[in-house]
Image (cartoon, rainbow over all chains, first blue to last red; front, side, top):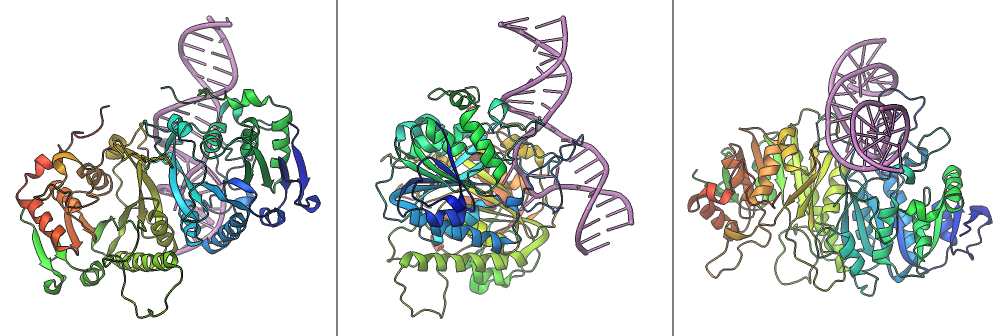
Length: 286
Length: 286
DNA sequence: GTGTAGTTTGAATCCTACG
DNA sequence: GCGTAGGATTCAAACTACA
């Protein structure tokens, strides 16, 4: 597929199928039509609140390693972050079809803020889904538990919504146990799938695994559905949606990520990077 | 051990070691001394938002700002619940030693409210710990994921706190993997351990497993430490603390639960119900 | 090509010394 | 006191080098 890329200024809001809009997510969402989307996936900045100016250096100092301290994760305070969350959710409410569902992924640093605020706005949580990482970064100094999980919140717009899509046959396949439990066991994004620039540095600090989006999309959408990702990063959501026969709108501010998303859609062989649809490649043994 | 039980009206606040106070948790906490506790465990009402009315809810806080009939019950209920959370946390802040830690357990229905509000009040989250239930209640209708997890938030009073207790040797033993991951795999409370009344009905709807409290206490306290449980239910926290050589203060409003806690401390053989300290009895195979 | 040993690295509210 | 820079510790999985 040829990925259409449009800059915010040139985006009318009319041609929103399988497009990546480069621009501010709030501004772009304001151009999109009401109740158009079947599913929304949000992978927001995690608001890690690391010490200012501190690079997340791996030891054996590499030359200016850029860590997680990216510009897009700079919020002054909880209030700033919360305001951003509310502005995003307000717009997403309008864009969701009546039966659409919303996913938000985060860690303990930020997920409770999204969870409470979306409840406050009337969204109705269906589940949380726990992503258990099979290869987490250990807590070096042994002062806390090793943080091996991320939390996904899955919600509908309102308490009364019943007709949303849930494909339990896929949920059964992905979850541990036999009754589609809300626990997914899979590794973080590494290897060939992980985008690296010419210097060999990772392109995006938090590229989500293809397998994760595959599970999200297959359990909560139908073929032909339209998916919104307002903070697309290097475009994993659209990349997987495309392969699975879903449509998408992606929004991303950073030009660098937009460029790499283009590369991903054109240069690379989709199926190669997908690690095998239908198979469980790139999953932990057994 | 003989469990001391005191009614709120007769509780001076002086003799708070290894006592169960029957009364309102806010009122009782106001009588306790500042910075006395090494660890606090909260297992709050989960705010399932079932059809309302009928019984007086345990989390409702008396307020003189009544009189305004809110059109949106749900929002009004969240406000009530949040006010309760804040009142609890305010008191717990005062009761915690500088180096103390706080645990809160909940599901997606309520945990995000506790998480955001405690962050707002300056508590600093160290981890979330995911309890994965090996025997969850399946979602029979197949309309969502089977909810097989509960989330525990583990926090200190302030960002700067460093000297809290974390026994990584125990954490390593309890967590999956080898680097004390934040994932605990254990069954819900059933069998001999589960308290049943003369009619065979369960005494408490959400009795916590002894094994869960064992893990909480062994990873985050030292022998001789003082633990507070302001919503004690049938007293699992004090029961386990006692066996493990920790001291406790428990608070519980419901007379029925207080009576059963007494039974638990006297009639039953503690060690029998404990399922073997140091061993991993009642755990899933391998 | 294949098997094996050694190397690299991952969204982290990590510690301590010093000016 | 605070801000900043230099420092040490792990496991799983993927990658690299080489026989």
